[in-house]
Every structure is written in structure tokens, then in C-alpha cells.
Length: 172
Image (cartoon, rainbow, N blue to C red):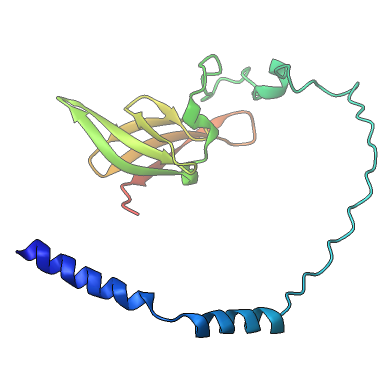
């Protein structure tokens, strides 16, 4: 019964659309005749200048750079605090600490890991003893709301000093 009533209402609505449309067609044709679209001409294409690429003296982009160019030069002859240069750097050691945000934690029994987001949107899981930041930062402690970091800052005389930093949980 409801279906029949619904069909009757729909058919009445649709029959109202079948009226005389000649006034609309007249309006469209007069509007098209009165308003001519003006399209500005295209700009002249710039003249092509041939460039000879000469990179004989430069490093090829398909060959990795030599180790001397990528490694930090640190004076290890002094008997003071030094970073471990033999350690392979991690992915998060290419980001400054202000480009990282703590987004949460994961825990399993006694282990707790921090979830850190980079400024390009990637999320990483890090725990105590792992490295991050540009200054050999090592995670000292992870709690539910903070990450405590010990960084090694060069003092200018060939030695390094410890600097304590922390990251707090952000919910932005």
C-alpha cells in the first residue's frame, strides 16, 4: 500500500516536469547570442635555449659520495667524552629533535617504547638505548608521557658535553 502511494507521488512530481519549456529555450538562445566569450590569446611560447651539461669535474649522482665527505671529522686524540663513530647511524639521526613529535607509547611487560612522528608523517617505535637527533642523542628513559634524551654537543675544543633534552606527548 505504501509502495503504491509512493509511486503515485513520484509520477505526479515527474509529470510536472513535462510542461512547456519554450521560454527557457528562448532565454538560453538569447543569452548565448548576447554574451560572446572573450578568450585572450595564448602567450607566446618561450624560446628554447640549448644548454650543454658539463659535469666532468662533478660527482656523478648515480655514485654514492665518498666516506670522507659524509662522515663527521672528529678529533679522537683527546682523552675526553667522544661519540661512538663506529656505530652505524639510525634513520632518525637525520632529523633535528624539533622535527620529531612524541605521539604515544607501546608497552609489553617491562618494555616501553615511544612512538615518534617525523615532520614528513612517518611514525617510528624507539626504546631506551636507541639513537635520534642530529647530536648523537640517545634515549635514556621512556615514560607514558615523555622521552628523556642525552645528546652529545661539541664544545669547540675537540671534546663533547652531555645535554639533557626531553620530548613530551603531543596530541595535535
